[in-house]
Every structure is written in C-alpha cells, then in structure tokens.
Length: 281
Image (tube, rainbow, N blue to C red; front, side, top):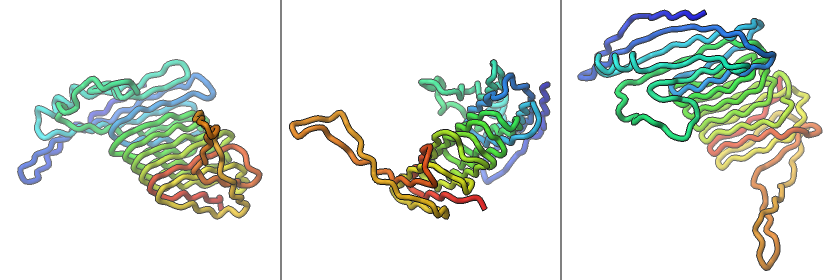
C-alpha cells in the first residue's frame, strides 16, 4: 500500500530582497518483514530519523519531503529531480535518497553539489516491530531517535543528537557534533560503543549492570552513580616495533572501570564532553 498526499502549498517568504519558495509532500508506505529479526536501513542526508517500536507486524514508513529554492525555476527543478527509494530485499528494508545523489555508502560522489540550487529535507517517522534491527544514518538538519526497539542498533549522525530509550540490543552509536543518550531495559549481551567529538555521552543501565567500561575524553570527565565500581589498571599493548633495546610496548590511554563482576566491554569516547553512566531508578 502506498499513499502519496501532496500538501500542494507553496509558501512565499519575503525577507528584504530574498524570496524563497517551498514545496512539501507527505507519503506513507508499509512493508511486511520476512524474518523474525529483519533489518531496517535508512540512509538519510538532510532531516531527522525517528523510529518507534510497537506490537504490530508491519513496518510503516512515513516521510515528509521539503524542497526550498530562491526562485520558481530552481524549485521546479528540485521537485522534478529529487527522489528517494523505499525497497525490500529478503529480510532487509532499505530507504535511501536516489537523486540528486545516491545516499548509500560508495567511493565517490558523482554530482557537482555546487550546481544544486535548491535545498531538500526528508524527515522519516517510522514504526517497526519491537525486535527489529536498525541501521540508521543522517548528516544534517536532524536528530536520530529510537524508542522501544530491542534489536541491534547501528546509529550514525554528523550534525545532530542520537537518543535511544527502551533498548536491549548491542549498540554502535556515533556522531560528530551532538550528544548521545541511551537508556537500556536490559544490559546488552555483546560489546557496544558510543562516540562523539563535540558532545556528552549519557547511558542509563539496570542496577544489575555487570560489564567493563572504557572511557576516553580529551576535555571531559567520567561520572556515575553506581557504587560497585572498580578502577582497572591501564592496559599494556605490544607493538610490532623492535630495536636493539627489545620490543616496544605502549600504554593504553583509556580509563577502564569494572561494574559489578565485569563482562562485555562498552566503550565511550568523546573529544569535548563528559561521560555519564547512570543507574535506573
């Protein structure tokens, strides 16, 4: 089932000598996952990605497209040129931008972006079965938010935040300019990592947390309200360097902490920001 509703309005905004025009379109599409642990993949560029888990069996993808330009001709080009795809192949459902440039990972960008005289945003609002695996990415003008999804999480942003609530699965979350905030219903069963350059990292775990956490920050501190925490010694790593004095060993600069009896390694790294590990109340 595919529904496309053209909101059909163009807004003329006057700001001194600058006249901008805007076109909006809403669409919806449903998929039926083929497996118990299917994967949803979203490759966005400009716009937010919001995913919520629910008790249903369908994946429902709502999209809101916005095209903006300084004049009618550029707006019309954007309307005719910009496009995105929603596809299913086996147990994977994939959403990506196909024009003016394919947003999926590849070695080079074919178009000269300086010639694109319009701006586009594509906002995703998605419902998935609770146990879905997610691989979500965006770059500008939006955050990534996930709630009540218990599958594996692979989340990537550049200029925006990442927020997760009601999670259980192994998580790999990274952004450049933004915070990462994650709340777990259960401790992930495998190693997880969280990375940002300019932002704070905040993770909330059940009081039964038992894991080894590695923390690294150039300009930040580590905070926790867990009580059963042990500081681990620095790791010594062997290198391939060898000279007349023998083999070279290097000290790991990460700070490591054991929560409870230890276990899987959860890594937290930020350049300018703090790390907060909180206990569920």
